[in-house]
Image (cartoon, rainbow, N blue to C red; front, side, top):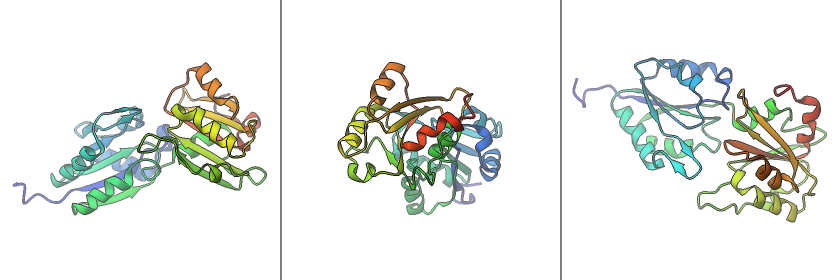
Length: 252
């Protein structure tokens, strides 16, 4: 079959969930098992990749802090090239692909290139970490809103809308914020949140080695440094964190 006569391929942008393979959606599991090629990120666990066919291509395109296996532009082009080979391509991302997963950027390239695609949402890391750490992200007596925010902007800064983030009665979840924890805490306190506001770091959420570090805004930077905790981890700020004492079930 010539290149020109090959049937057009397709890309499925799939959320792999927060880590525990049992939290993968039924549709995501079916697509992984049927894929010709899987382009996967750093936070996709081996248990999920083992669902793939032995002959499926497995291509690592992960990103860690200041350490990218390939530039985003190369990943975008790779997805186009694989689809043009007539392959069923699963682009597998940790959590949900539309929540700090650059899924929108990748789909823009596919759309511009005329490649067919679908999106399969996943359990985002914030929901998984909150559930497995014992603090609900919203609660009628504590938080009427929840905000997901990146702790690491594209230009390397953490120049965020601090007055909006420091509003009372909401839960804030910082993705990729460990390296900026001191600045995050300083700004939230400076913009009105009490230094005693409960805060937590959840590392490897939903996995067997999950670790939850409890603190306050005033003590969190010191606790992170003292513990040596490293990414992948989320920072959660708000009074719901204090519910962990009663609602923790996973780490007991």
